[in-house]
Image (tube, rainbow, N blue to C red; front, side, top):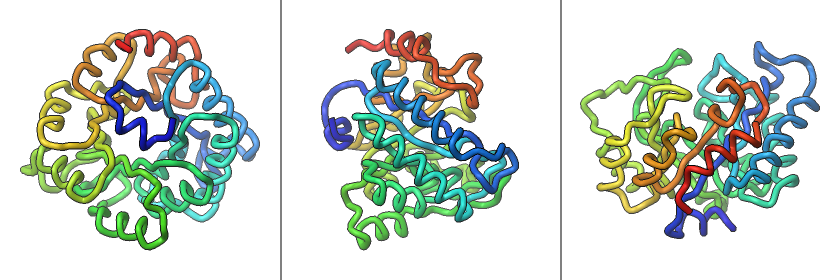
Length: 264
């Protein structure tokens, strides 16, 4: 199933995270790109075999993050995305963290991936790597001018690990702004990796936008049933790994335990 169909149908969907090991050019890189590619492909295959609907390839190991990626990071992430896309038969997306929207779109389009995750789309936020301003106009314009309209955009609002510079802006207003700017789906998160997305936040967003609303953090076997009573989909990463440690490989057993809580 294409990601466009997945977002359009009235069903619950789960997107699994393929967290790449630290890429070249980062402090955690251990000197083997083949190890990066190998674990990414292994994780993607495990996710597909265990029943997820799509995957996102992300440079999760690159902490501490900059706002954009260096050339060597972009190149390595592109190769990882290509290898994952060639290895599985479900939709593949790209997230060049922390918020390199141009890299995400370019990598997705050039490798045949179907969608991207844009962490900061319409908000102004700060995090330890600096200040990030909204990219919606430039992102959507670039997508159109480069002929990438087939690449779907899943946009976070008031994303985890950041602080809003304008705290008076409600979650509903951010959601409406993201939808008005053309986001194909909206991601709502808790405050950090593994922190449950508040149900009331998902409910508020669902009431004001016509596009799918996705729970983007803290979904696990214990809460997926409640989360998905409201959310249209979930993006899941750390709860699919032993001990919740993001550098660990995906556990097929944990994926199946989480998906068992879905009513589908």
